[in-house]
Length: 327
Image (tube, rainbow, N blue to C red; front, side, top):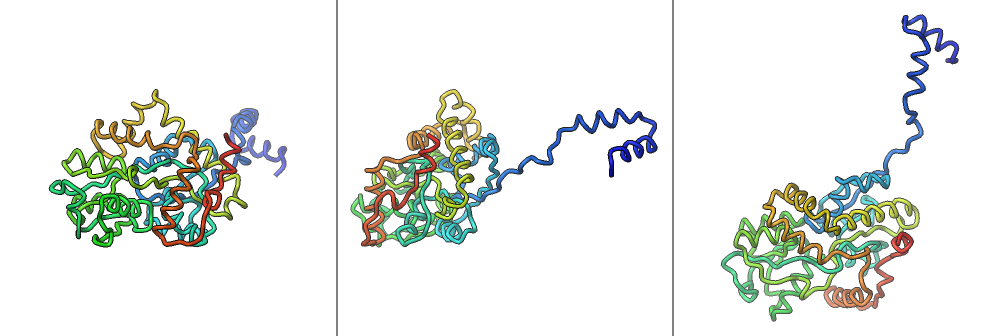
């Protein structure tokens, strides 16, 4: 349809002067060429403060600023890593199960660290006052081979208890571990903030801190080697979003907002939220990396636990090239 024909049609169709239509047409923003956000799927082991970076970053708009629309999917870590390797997920946040698979030859890499140490607290039923009392009982973990399960075993070993003397119940995601504790299906479980703080406020026993026994990486960002090679721009955008979000979380001026966000998200008391957030802040990586000596120690823990003979370097598990370009 020619412009001349269009103006004639408009004049015949209405008594309103055609110049008004012309002004209207040219006053409307042209959005035909605007690009839509890139949709990605990110696995999380459960909704905890450890993965709040992803939820808050999405809600605050830091991801959309980078042209990313993330969908956060909760599932058992081992299942998620299988999906990641198969290309059914874009990213995973669970470094523990991912590392186990890396050591078995899966083509995936750590590309960002949210935490440089774990925040799990071994939390038990109120009547249990010591770790020795857990002998021959059931402990809930997301999965025996992820960082949560390995942390539980290392805590037990550190207190002179053979982990084979206990039964480990796979709860799949963190919320289920907390529910299992409340329903007395397990004698104890490892809980991250804010569940650990909430349970403690309800009278449950906080027996040990994972960071004192298991210096393992728990939450970060893992993706496939294929994505690093073929979807570099997307990986870069996600990392930029995380850097923005973490900088905002660490800013003391935003603390009140963060406490309100945690209180609303988890439906907990503000004092519990404040304590949980303070616990999380101590574990956050300052720049998305983790010190090399800490990773080397972590590798030896994995090799011993998984009975892997092959030696690994930090470079075998991670690819920090994109992060380094952004710093």
